[in-house]
Image (cartoon, rainbow, N blue to C red; front, side, top):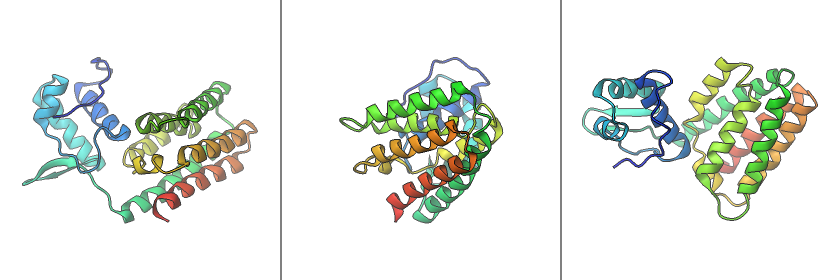
Length: 217
């Protein structure tokens, strides 16, 4: 039985968009982990929508590589091996490093303030028991702002589509890793505030490379 945190049942786009967004978000925050089996019937019952938008959503998520369908085994959240994960980190490092670099001089003051607020929220979450789901959400929002979601929406949509497949759950459970990420984010934000695009982009690439090494050596 699916047990997901749902947004308000308001369709800002189509019902298919709504179903896609719910499942994609569930994968992002870890409600649906890699290898989890999921059926169209489960989603229909949970979201109270008809068969057509669910079927279309499954096809869309398969095309994105988030779901894998097997004629005999059904549909499950796509699993990645170490080689796939390393490649994904490399791609994200290139994309996010470039995104931060070209966005640094165009980010508004409100974007920078929001980035600082989110990083402070992350610092507070580092204290006490680790809230993996919360950290994943805050970290995602922070990266999207720094990558220029309000400046280069198409670039950040591409980054976001790949981000959902990031194997970050284990990363946040590592000793001191949330604190390290908070500190690295702080350096990126300081470079952005100085409007030093080369330094900001370099810090983002080093940040993602650090995460990759922590997970895979």
